[in-house]
Image (cartoon, rainbow, N blue to C red; front, side, top):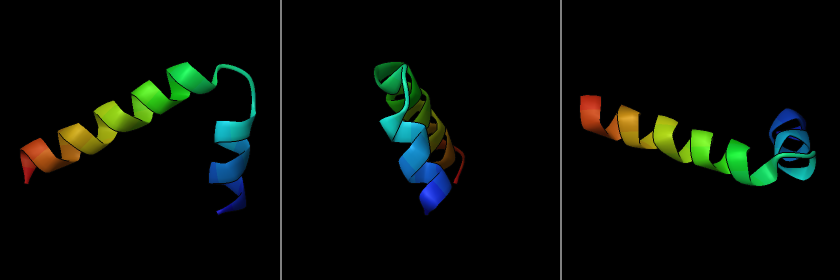
Length: 31
């Protein structure tokens, strides 16, 4: 959980959120 928090609290938050959303969408699409 801490790693995820640090990921979204560091610089480039928007880019990382987009990547995370794409990863979630990919998981949903492949299941």
